[in-house]
Image (cartoon, rainbow, N blue to C red):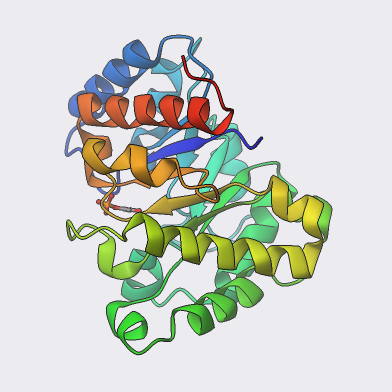
Length: 263
Ligand code: PEP
């Protein structure tokens, strides 16, 4: 069975070092030594170093929100994969829709970043998803195919097994609209089917595919209980420790359901 992964994408929040530290301390205290689900927080890059120190001794992972594909050099304002590892990161979010649609990030760029992340042992969380117009135009699967084949180009099955995917319908991110469990499960099953075709069934069965898009404590259990949904990438609700912890508790309950345990 795939272990669930719940990741909090703090984006350009909270506004101060003190607030970011407080959030990290509260999440750490709430998670304790619990490891039934894997949990990662992805703070702003300026807060990573401090949050890494705060998380010491906890099973929580630490993720960057972006990186450059080059290893070093004249790339003003950028971070390399090795810098993220050096500062304590285990994960990095790549190809978030806010970067694809707001900063012109292409599948080719995501693919280059993916290779650089894997090269230094970071676990990439590669985001995919259709816009509202694409869904209404019945183009969801075509868009996913383009993003999957472009972003994951050139990977061998062994490398693919180290990648996490996040299906995030753009129309559901930060909007309060959530894909229904049926819509999300259908997209996840499509993604897993494509993985099986390209990399073989064993790899497809191994890859964690998160759902993202207005995941909240009151919808998380239903989404996370779907057979092909292996976790959540959480934006807004990850900024309130109580909400994020409630979502991780839904993850534990969903994991118990999936393993057939009733307690
Ligand atoms: C996200 O930022 O990846 C996200 C899913 O945000 P939200 O949960 O706020 O929709």
